[in-house]
Length: 257
Picture 1 (cartoon, rainbow, N blue to C red):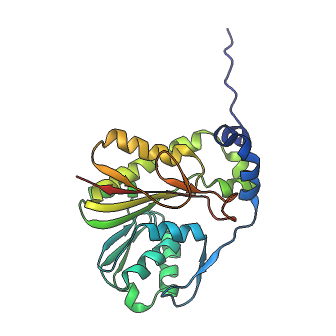
Picture 2 (picture 1 turned 180 degrees about the vertical axis):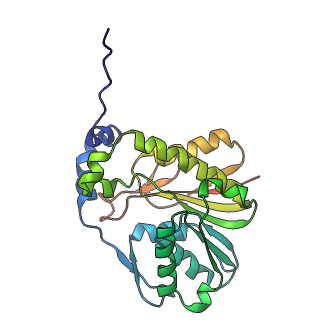
């Protein structure tokens, strides 16, 4: 007896399930040219990035003297926002596992930050999902801008769209959770973690936080962010209603124990 193989949904079919009638307008906005803005605060020269990315980095609330970890730092735009908030004080560890991306990160830091603001920055190449094996209870603030599906890129790249499958976000979500669970051990009790992605997929966004709540019950609390569209956990900035900004999902949590 021949079994019927379940039909694999197309990219459009997959995301229409999440966004229903909104999908076509959202897809149109995702295909439009990006509108980066110049971040200049404390820099030697402007760095251009999505305005939503600046908002995410600032949402972590870094203050002078903080010990800060940027777990997936490359290409470095959010790292610059964190560094300028420190004003040369405290410490900033900028991590990226990829040597090629670390090289780009190093160039961004060198070309944009004054020497006095670079002195407290350490660039590392660890696996973010295993960070808690290296350090625990070590940071006041952690930014986890996790590798994600990046649907805006997929839609604009014919090969990426052809290669896409529903299994990709599932695999990414497993790694995103591992990174977030590791970050929870690396931040001090009372410290903050800002989890973010540029994905529009709930599996990679609020469901990662939901999984952490289930498996680390009582160890953290969510803090309200007054930006974007509220989700079951966190919020998301979507370009169809935000003048092209995003997509950018973010959720701010505080470690309790």
